[in-house]
Image 1 (spheres, rainbow, N blue to C red):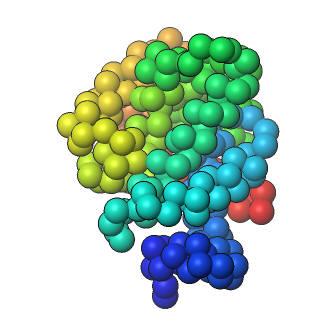
Image 2 (tube, rainbow, N blue to C red):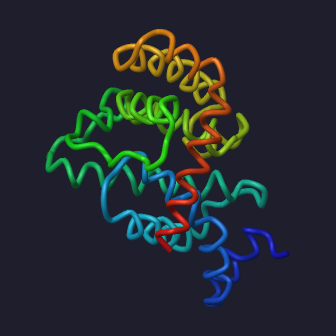
Length: 208
């Protein structure tokens, strides 16, 4: 099976089938990335992300870093989209602005359990910069080096964002629910993250 990097190079060279294969391989993951942070037009944002990967032909430095490259592009697309949607002249500070701060939040995920709903709601209440770091770490299971590349920061900074994100996530969850539900959710955060990922993946496949 062709690697992601091989498909991207072929797509850049004009091979439309390679582009379709790459798009199909990663559509659900990129859809999930946008689904927890914005409402409507998600398919267009996914398409824009892949096109950004094609245009940025010199930015992929290592063959084993395609996912970091892809989600780095998705992060830039998200930030531009949010800034445009906010109708503000001054740049937004994503280290303090949350999805909830920006107005109506994305619709609830269908069929989710209490813990899954709490996790998604709490994520949307923390700064977007930290939300992105946590979701890439838990939903995408990125390693420290991958996460650093996707966020375009040193690895120590990336890991610090995960730690601070967890602290803010717990505080946000406690504002939403009782301590017992929060503890049961955060005690097995990898499990609930996998469950939310599976629900969003199914939704993304249904959107194709």
